[in-house]
Length: 249
Image 1 (cartoon, rainbow, N blue to C red):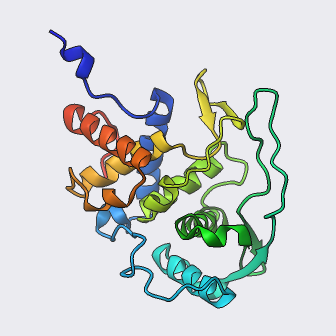
Image 2: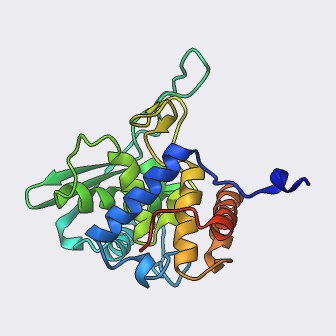
């Protein structure tokens, strides 16, 4: 009688749900070798990052080289520079919401390769640092390889989703960049669209990754924060109960 109260639901709204499924299919067409097809899910463990990290430029470069390997980017094409925005002032709008400040990292093309600038304030958050590197290298795969135009509406969203496709979604899911102060609307919808993937959107994408890897209880879920793990489990429950997705890798 009360079954309707406990029916599983998708962690994200209908517009975000449809976008995840559509773009996962697009990524599968663009990159057939992925975490969906057998590549490992990269985790914050010595297995994937065995190099000693001491905060030096050399250790950061070694970490970047590892992430390059996992994102299938030639390390020799990627230059690394450091910026310092640790003293930046955080501003808020009339609603008390934080406004975007200088990004933790930026990507740009340089001659035949790419330049990634990393804010030194990121160094104390290794999970966030790897996520930032993966995001910027995803730009290299998408923009640098001319797979999408820079002005496409979901540029940053798709860049986040690309890290899930290559198996590094755990890092960004633990430190999503979505902010309510910087939202627009999904095309042909009144629903609000974040510039970057939110935790519920990551939950839906990672639920696809888990189930299409045959993992109803993925071992890598323990590396997610409590909120991210809850969104993942909600997505898995919904997919198992309904099979409601157009994505078929």
